[in-house]
Structure formats: C-alpha cells, structure tokens
Image (cartoon, rainbow, N blue to C red; front, top):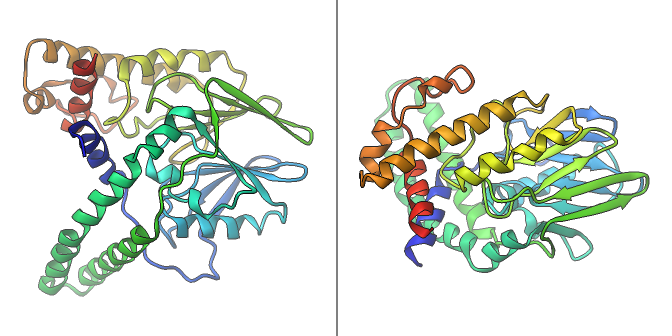
Length: 340
C-alpha cells in the first residue's frame, strides 16, 4: 500500500466503531419526517449505524441517501423502511466514498441503481476501502485484548458491565468486517444528474471538492429539502482529517443560492436554515491559512498541531475551546500542500 493511501485509510479507522447484534425484531432506526414522504433515519442504539440516512418515498419507488457502516446495519435499515412503505428501493445515492456511507452497498441487487460521483467509484475500485478493511482487521485484535484486560481488572460491577458491552460490540464488529465487500456505485455522476420519479424531481449535484474529491448533494427543489452528506453538517465541523479545506470553503458558497429550508446531513439530527454555511466557511479558511503559514515556515506537523488556534470559532463550534487541533487534520493539509 502506498504511503498516501495508508495515511488516508488509517484516518478512516477513527471514524466510528461498530456494534453488537441486536434482536432482529427490533427497529434499528427511528424515522424523523421532514416533509411528507421524506425522512431522516437515525440509529436508535440497537446497532451501530454511524451516519444519518435519508429516505425519500416516491410514487412508485424509494430513494435512499447513503448506506450504513456495515452490511448488517443496512439490512436492518431496509427492513425498517418496510414499516413506512412496501415500495421497492430503486435508487441509492452515496454522498461520498467513506466507509460509513458505503459499506452497506453490497446488500443491494442489480435492480438498484447505486449512484455515486465518478471519483468515489474510482476510489473504491482502486482499493481505498479494501485497504481500510485490511488495517481495521489488523488493529482490532489488540483493541479487543486491551478491553479484555480492563474487564478482568475492573472491580465496579456497573463499570464492568459497560466494558463487557464494549467488548461484545468490538467482537461483533470483527465479524461484520469479515462480511464486508467494498462495493462501488454502478452509476456515476460527474457534475449533476436529475431523476424524475413520478411527480418528484430529485437533483443530484457535485459541488466540487470538499470533504472528499467526490461529494454529492441530493436536492428536492419542490420540497425545499437538501441532503448534504459530510459536505456540510450544520453546527458540526465533522471529520476534518479529510478533504481539501480551501476548496471546500469556496465550494460551499453556491449552497447559499439554492432554495431550501430543511437539511439532512450525513451525521446528527436534521436541521433548518443556512446561517451555519458562513460560519463553517470562516472556520475552514482560518484553519487552512494558519496551517499553510506553518507549513511554509517548515514547522513539523506535530508542532503545528499544537499551535493552530481556532478558539475564536468556539461560539459556533464549542469543541475548539483551547489552542491546538487534531494532528491528523494538520497532516492532511500538509499532504494536500505537498501534492500541489
């Protein structure tokens, strides 16, 4: 595996853990109706789901935006959707290639159009998710061993039960990893695609590089709803150890011109309004400019990570209360600068 690919997929390991096996009769998701027949599907904790999925029920079929963190979680999603409608899922959109949005792709048959950006398909075909699986399987056994040791040493019954649950989650995740087969989209978009399903218009838009080189937005103009994946998460900065932070800030600008009220992002609850677009742009530009200045001065990544000061953004992003930021984020910006 080349160094750049290893750096990228190593960052993916920290995006989320997996889950234990839940009772097959329980719903794994709760559905939040945004407008009639448009829902955000949020995991209810019976199984790890990681992302927020959008479900659009059309006149004759269903479109799903993103698949879950494992094939099992997506099978549970499909079963849960049947409590809303008996219409078949005909379209799946991957908002980007990251595993928590694509690792459920494999459960769908050839009758389902899995739509992704051409660059997302290329990344998966070229092996980025296979490499991530390889690293995850390497790193999981030591994690399980460490948890087993903590369980054995813990004297408090309540805390011991919590650790035993974490251990069960990790073991189940290992089995789910073995099942996972990275599956790329079977239909690709370069710029934009419009689907007309019954009376509904569904626009699929590539905003340009941002969180990844292949982000997609799903926009319902009549319903004034947009699904943004990890490109924009409202009051969350999301996973900053990916992407192209300067281009990301610029490519957020056209969102302000779209007529929407409701947002379903790739993580967290749905929200309304556009004001956080500007906050996030300012944050990204500040992060980029400070990091670029340190890069140009030859400051090592680890040192730069302690010096980047984003505290002026804490009114909007409360996790930036002290000077310093994630070293992996700084490493990613350095990598982009070096590659340019």
